[in-house]
Length: 171
Image (cartoon, rainbow, N blue to C red; front, side, top):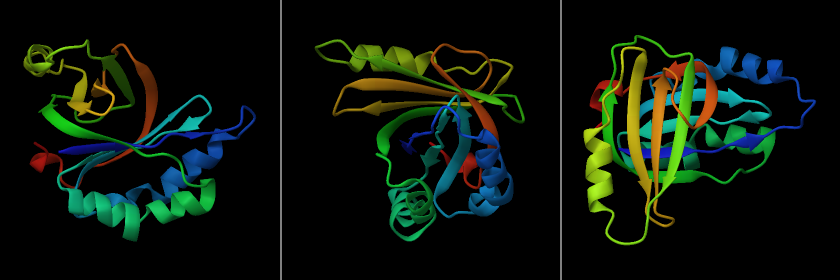
């Protein structure tokens, strides 16, 4: 599993209805995208911030270099794209999610193995969670918990649409 997110900051007076319309009319374009586990079309105040879980790097590369990312660049400019290596994924019982959270935890100096093992063991979605992923940025040594559904600490987002073509294959 590979994770990816870009956040597009929007002016304070930006009409978020434009993003809602964009997702409503174009969001299903990735509902069958090869290699994609899930894409959460996310917004928060003054930002559009889709989050992806990829089942393979080939699918992610196809999207970035030969797919939909060109539309983002055309419409908003080229945002920086954060990428993480996947550590764990768990499905929850909720059929859908209206909210999402991303919690970034900076790892202390030293061997992170125990912290990571503990975080993996604790990745058990509650009854109101669709799914949860634990990913890591080894350049900055930041552990990221991404949760669809529920109320969890971290940056909160509204979920406008979920594309889940390879949800059952995420590992």
